Length: 274
Length: 265
Image 1 (tube, rainbow over the protein chains, first blue to last red):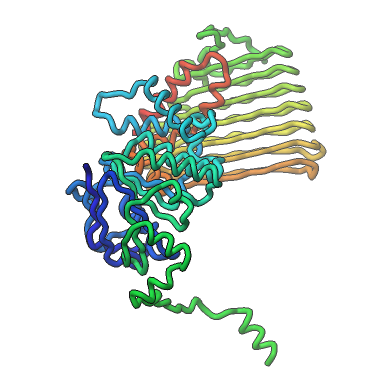
Image 2 (cartoon, rainbow over the protein chains, first blue to last red):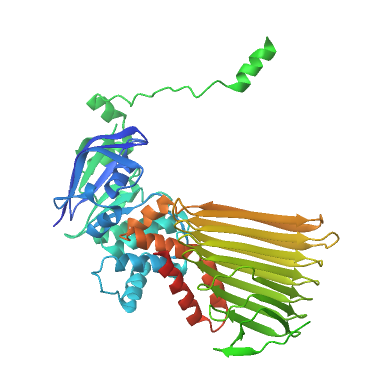
């Protein structure tokens, strides 16, 4: 069993602090869901765990089985067992899905070891069939010309093949139609085991018809303000987030008003009128 | 004066003997593939492609320091040229590729796709000019250039459409990928057009490897070096695809791409 601990995490992006003391502990065999209004730091949390270059960890720590994740490079985090299914995966011209996934599998092997072509094709075929993906997938360039749904399935395909200890699924349900949502949800659910846990970030209840969470957390104003079981999802679905704000006496983040200059049109109109 | 050149057979393809000036003729409706590797490079070359003939010209410049070299290709009616050049310049090499394609008669067409890799303090100067001296002629020129260390790559893409030569189609594209801050890639697309009835476009884009793309690949466990390598190979994939289309060049392609990868490190 593995453990991912996020302790008192403060994260900034472009000088603005978004996460203000997040605490969370996940074990393999558990599915955690994070919900929250727009702009409260859900994607910031997932990017910071994976080590995205735009996000700065101001303080706090992330530990994977006791090891300091923040000291690891992005690729090291992946090889140690973290996986981020992205909301907007990159499109990489000229690089085929097969070459990319094969290189990622190879990266997990010891020096001198090589992945057998037969094993690779078999693994890729099996995973693509389970996700009901088109057969031309290996030859297509990574996410180039993929529909929204295909991109999300491609993320889950990589997750199935790379077998991480913990996956962070950042709004994996956006852009999916009902059938694709079911296929993705079922595939994630099937991975649940003593070797695999997930942190699911979502806005919608419908994904959770397929992915059964053990814990639900509400992220607001850069902090986890409430944790509970699935009954929390129903409550949010019916009543939104205002009741939590009221219950906990939370204010909205203050908005800083900044002048970006004088409106040229407005001043010239004023001159004409004079 | 025309001089007949002795062809050598090389894995089923014609190789041109090294020399100073070679003028060759490709007969009507012939389909000729010329492969030029670092052992068979010549300084000046002129090829006349007769009516209805097709010339596929693949060359790889690596070891030799070419300067003042010139390739002239003349295309007659319905003649077709496919030209794919790979240049790798290392150390303080100075490589000049100077090619003129004369689209002399109607329905002549050419497609040129070149890949340049400059490393160390090398200099690559590329001057490719398509002269549309007949109506209804097409040219399509793409250059993919990668710069590394303190190298310099100059890309001059040129096309001329003479007055009264109607319905010509000209496309030019130059893409540059700078792998570090010290390298210089310059792209200069030039269209000399003296005729309104034509279709012409040019595009240039020079940049570095996208940080988001690197993050994406690295988030799947690829080291920065492996991820960069994959992105660069992806960048030149259109060239590899074109070589694949030429039958029997599998070994040649592997050899030149291996050299390319070696020089990326």
